[in-house]
Image (cartoon, rainbow, N blue to C red):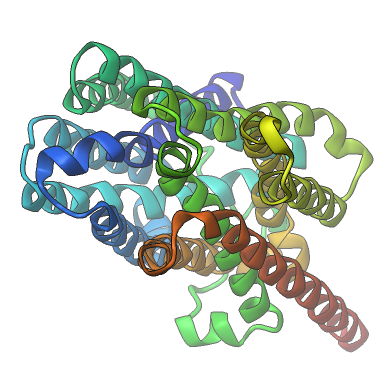
Length: 399
């Protein structure tokens, strides 16, 4: 496979990460101008996430019909249009409208590229793939913080939209590189590609429900930090809006650094071990935000954000990369599709739910909410490991 192709895939993932952290970092400045309650960010987030759930569930059929390169190109067009739409909008309703292509552009390409890497590359390439997402997600709040200091939040979306447009053009001219490379079934040693499974067949596969819950818990924690960290730092830690927007990017910096390092150490650990290491580091970061540390509490809270990011770093790519091993290469694309759907359901449901709960109580419950999601993730992931080990044993015994 051409080394330029993996570079293109990595750059595409940077493009996917660029807009993912914008709403959370910009929202403290957006909602007063739009004249809506602070919790309304959850509405935009839900619309985006519903679109990603739908496109994730369709990813298996789309990938078989049109292929990964075309999915990547069209998805990036949709995201670019949505970002430029955000840049020219000054009304909450218009933001909701532009959120539709924003969401539809994310789900299917995410599932298709993840499965492509999982089936054709080792674990370190999957980790570095998501490191590229982290680079984009880290750049997003930095660009938005710069825009807030010099102009308005619309400028941040405009800059990211232009960068996304340039990446989309690059992907278009790279399409010939995918020729004769767009098969995720080569690991089947020449066997006929398996048929597409129905949603019921996928969910009934042993271990699928458990791994879906684990992805749900992970996304709930990750995206709650994404959407609410900046607001939490502003309201509970007394940071300015521009400082909070930049410091919220520490979470994504932690993810990025963790995935750079993780790519080198995956050769020494299994995917399951990498997940457990990440969960432990993530738990330590949450505790830094919970425990009282006197006058140094704000500094430790920021360190906690970095630690949570470092902990998240290996979890998501390692769970994805382990999919063919746990469920079989013939089911991998279908399983990854529902995993991504579960991820985006968590994304759409839990950050808005946190917003409603925090409005009734206060934003101080932020780290406790993260701790609860972490516990759910750990328990369901261990349950999945147990079920798939037994299923694999019985399948091998039958053969």
